[in-house]
Amino acid sequence: MAFSQSNPANYRSGFTALIGRPNVGKSTLVNCLVGEKIAITSPVAQTTRNRLRAILTTPEAQIIFLDTPGIHKPHHLLGERLVKSAKSAIGEVDIIVLILEGSERPGRGDLFIVNLLKRQELPVLVVLNKWDLVPENESTKFFSRYQELLSETNWPIYLCSAITGHGSKDVIKAISEILPNGPQLYPQDMVCDQPERILLAELIREQVLLHTREEVPHSVAVKIDRVEEIQSNKNNKNAQNRIGVLATVFVERKSQKGILIGKGGSMLKTIGKAARLQMQILINGPVYLELFVKISPGWRSKPSRLAELGYLES
Ligand code: GDP
Ligand code: MG
Image (tube, rainbow, N blue to C red):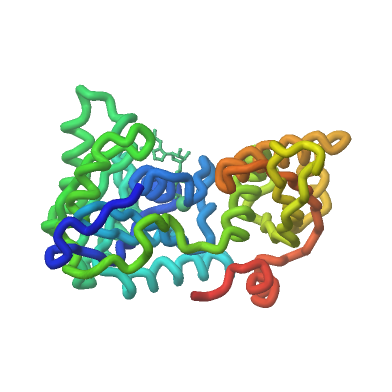
């Protein structure tokens, strides 16, 4: 979709950080607001390791979203980096969108984030997400719990469902109105600034987490070894070239490797197929995917390993 800036003098642009506990729906909300599958989402917390920039261009404004990992208490090196990256995002943006899980009671983690945000000067806008899960006759009760949590602030509160899209237009409008005047910073048809390789790796990791759940926890990393175009059959003019993707999934223990591969390779096959289908949507063409599994003990605590896998400090 292409449109020109309706009134360049009044055009607004800038950066927005989505901040919130793991699993509140930050990535889902980015996807919902921008309208394409960019950030990976998962029922398992803490899947967003690399900071993604998703870009929404409207006739009135260009909003660049930084999807930050959830703020939580660090357990080990990887956890610390997640927190650091979330905190540093606060220093880089024009506005903060605080995402809270409206369908749950506010918890200590929410209080921690609210207090963190109170100590800084940027405008904050609150989204009570997952509002689709709140029974209608209880919405006043749910809402008042959050009013209490936010009582010492004047942050506007928006009810939203990142799944149904309900309320998302109001969030976009509110963000657009707060952003400073400025030109489009990215081409208007660009929706994401991450290299495709990282997106491909994230799609594989998403399927690993979805299919293995607790058995193969967050000690999994994916490295894309090669992406190449495979010439299609010359005799068939209509055949599209396929994109070949070679990737390695790293786990920490032998037992996890076993689970990931499954009986006769069945689990890896299922994961590979699901990831391939997602990649085909992203690339918009046929994909051939080959997955390998390797054991790399303790990769989470080794800085060099983290760097190699792309989890660099930003
Ligand atoms: P993040 O860790 O904050 O980025 O959370 P995700 O975006 O990965 O979402 C975590 C889980 O919550 C996923 O299973 C989502 O499908 C689910 N989720 C996110 N937003 C909503 C919502 O508005 N309603 C419902 N019912 N589920 C949601
Ligand atoms: Mg996320």
